[in-house]
Amino acid sequence: MKNREWMEKVAADLQGLSNYAAVKDRLAVKLTGRAGNEEILEKLPHHDMEDMAVIYKIRIYGDACKTALAAVTNTMLKQYGITAEQLHRDAVEAASAHQPYVIRTMAETLNELCGCTWKQEDAVPMYVATNKERMNGASVLVYPDFMETAAERLRDSFYVLPSSIHEVILLPEKLGHDIQELQAMVRNINADIVAPEDRLSNSVYHYDRKEHLFELADKYKMRMRS
Image (cartoon, rainbow, N blue to C red; front, side, top):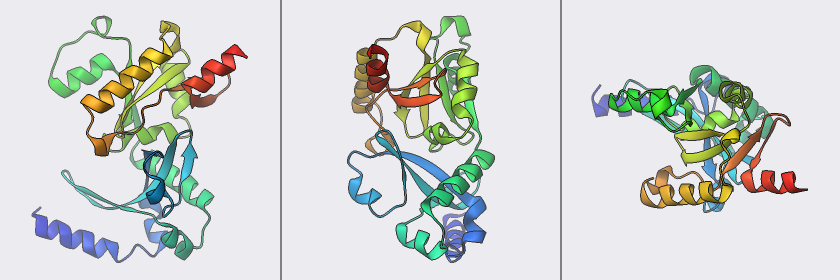
C-alpha cells in the first residue's frame, strides 16, 4: 500500500478514538522506563512495575509493513468514563489475545533471525521473550500467565534482562549469575548497542517462582539476605 493511502487509513481510524467500545479490542500495552519519562507519564494513565511503567496504546492501522499506535492520554481516559484499572485489564487482555508472547532459546532466535545453525548445547543457556510482532515485545512481562509459563519453560526462577523495549532475555537462576555483572552487561549493551528510543531500563529483574514475585534483582538479593 502506498504511503498516502496508508496515511488516509490512519486518519480515518483516528476519528473513532473517542468511542471506547470501538477501540477496546485494539488496545495494546507498552513497557517504558520511568526515569527520564516523568513529564510524559504525567499525561498518560500508567501502571508502575518496579522502575518501569506500563502505558497503553491503540492500534490504529496495521498491515504487513506498518502499524500505527496512538497513546491513551489522561484526557481520553476521562472521556471514556472508565478507571485506569479497567483500562489496564482491558489492554492486557487485548494485547495477550492479539500479540501472544513467544519464548525461544537464544539458539532458536539466532537461527530464525540470521539463518544460522546453532545447536542449543552450543549456545549460551538463555531465552528470548517477545511478542508475535517483536514490536514492544518487552510488554509480555505484563501478561497474566507469562511469568509462570516462563518459569515452567526454564524449570527455575529466573533473571530478566531488558535488552530493549522489544524483547527481554531470561536467565535461569540455577546458573549462578552475579547480579552486579548482569547489571554491568545491561548498562554496556544499552550504551553501545541499543538505540536511545529503544532502551527500556538499566536494571536487572528477578522472578521468584516459589513466591510468584517479580522484583528488582537488588531487592531479591536483599530479601534473600534477611
